[in-house]
Image 1 (cartoon, rainbow, N blue to C red):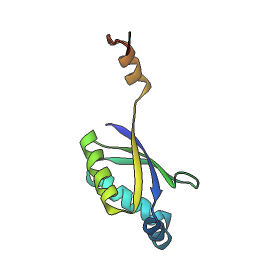
Image 2 (image 1 turned 45 degrees about the vertical axis):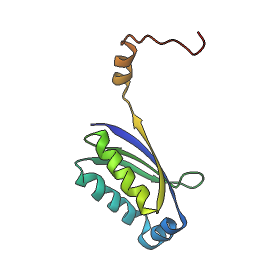
Image 3 (image 1 turned 135 degrees about the vertical axis):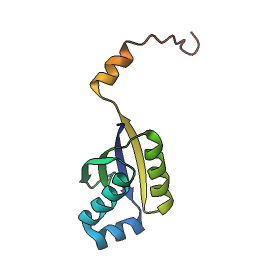
Image 4 (image 1 turned 180 degrees about the horizontal axis):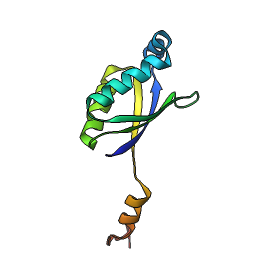
Length: 106
């Protein structure tokens, strides 16, 4: 199951919602959305600084992640960035594949 790192920053309206619901309420909302698509939530952390929340989630496929990202962005409550995460084994497999590439200007 593909794993993703999600980094989120609350908009002003999103921060107001967080203040009303609390972190537990937001985690429950995330678990409902992710679980509803057959995925799972590995971790949810809240932070302060550039990012307000950091999550690690698993989805059955990348299209599910894209659907959630679009819905979240359309809500206006958050700005998010989703990064696919690869296992050590997946990178090992990638290093064994032959790729021919010509650098620009070479």
